[in-house]
Amino acid sequence: MSMKKIGARLLQMLVVLLGISFLTFLLTYMAPGDPVRTMFAATGVIPSEEVMNEVRESMGLNDPFLVQYGRWLGNCLRGNFGESYAYGKPVVTLLLARLWPTLRLTLFSMVLMLIVSVPLGMLSAVYKNKLIDYFVRLITFFGVSLPNFWVGLMLMLLFCVKVNWLPVISSAGDFKSMILPSATLAIAMASKYTRQVRTAVLEELNQDYVIGATARGVKSWKILWLNVFPNSLLPLITMLGLSIGSLLGGTSVVEVVFSYPGMGNLAVSAITAYDYPLIQGYVLWVAVIYMLINLLVDISYNYVDPRMRLKR
Image 1 (cartoon, rainbow, N blue to C red):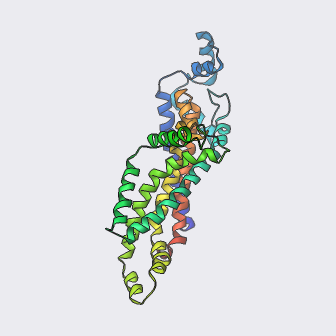
Image 2 (image 1 turned 180 degrees about the vertical axis):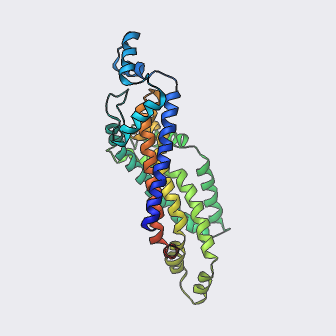
Image 3 (image 1 turned 60 degrees about the horizontal axis):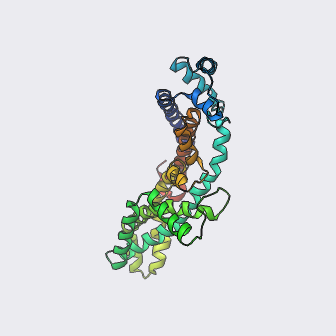
């Protein structure tokens, strides 16, 4: 991807972020609840209505919508996302503290998923319409169908309650506490990716170069791993980029089930507490991370598939 195209993509990202920021602020502005009352409730003190009106005025909550949005957007451009109503700390500080635990959980889940899905998908493709293919397709069907929260609860019941191998409450710094949340996320992803790998490999196995290499006596495992697999990577890389972005912003249910101290758990707490600055900051952070990952995926196409360089 040329620098001109990268610049155009970055400009598109700015426009999209501007739209996301406007919609996010609009939805939180229209949401029910009183931020000032929430802020005082977090301290355990409910003052008189006159005091709360003075606080609303000092915070600019009585200003028109566009004035509030413009002030908030200007602060965001300077890296100031405001202060959390519930925690009384800067939003950036809270998000930074939870970003690395969620990133660790995401990466560990992706590694588990790839370890399972790539061999199973290739095995299912090589033995198409055989017993092992039917078995793989059956278990992936159930894996895709099961909801994450139910899988998490069943894993917790088995490994935490029945056999007592793993802790019930997860922590950000303990490797053992990451196993069950990562496995929960990896099960559904591995089922989806196994099917995708199978489809991509089957498509490559029907190409002329595979038939020609087989006719020349090249060993099947060399064809599979040195030719078929690299040519099947392009759609997988696209899915990986989308999955990483969605995991960084979509692990909320699993983090809540396992009490994992990540960004998703923080976002759920912010929603239940009507913590609007934290919600707005979280949405913008996830949007930026998601779009940056997609941009990196597009750039990586040039290195994975040389044909993409020829189209520039």
